[in-house]
Length: 326
Image (cartoon, rainbow, N blue to C red; front, side, top):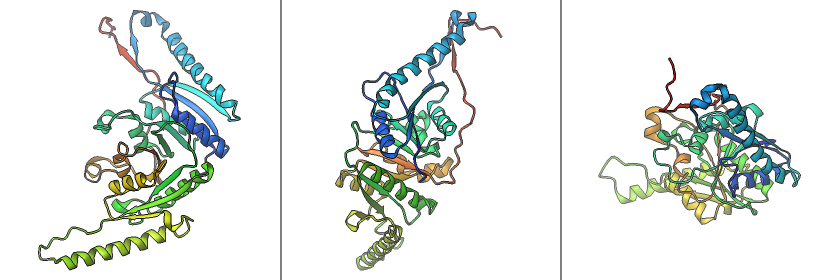
């Protein structure tokens, strides 16, 4: 993971009384000596009515953007008293997740901090929920904030996959471990690691004995232990903080995060599409709802964002009471 020098904070509601993403981003910025930008993507459509058609739209757009920027500036002023360098930006752009990724690209952000979507992620791919799409599409690491307050010597869990299940890039584990170490050092926390493996693969024959299944399970555990130790050889993570779990990755990560009372789970994600995505799924996406702690998602360095570079600007809607000429 690259050093974090610039953090983009996606502010969902500049008027909210509680801004956990801002709080934690500011804590990280101070610990890392990084700068912040508070960003709000204005995606609400403007309705074409008689007033707008009279030529006053540019003024409405400008006043709305300035009002949002002023709200962000009030938040930034409080952060600057703590010695943090903070900029603000409000832009007309949509959808919000694309606006965030475009802005991160523009300012060369090293980390995006955003709040998690409130509620269950039911058919998130169809609804295009912001946190889900950031997880899928952002090449920049994303910290999804699910809990309030600041970090107090946090416990950080690195979820790695030395078996490279589903063709995950081999170097992704190194990115996960580097990110975990970076956060733990900056926040004076501790790092744990978890690796999930399948205890007994599917055995086609019904004539396999219990002793054979036991032997297969023992061999699977031994091989998984070897991969795990090799992946962590240079990590500096003590053995008592290494968790090898013979369960499905989703269940293993949830179980370990709960047992150690994790504050941040660090995972890797690769974006898939089409039938392969439906068949394989994505572990990081699946634990969005089940984990009760924050989630840091990193991507392979070769990942390319499939997001257009040019902003979309203002989105318009036609009022049913107004007839727009052809």
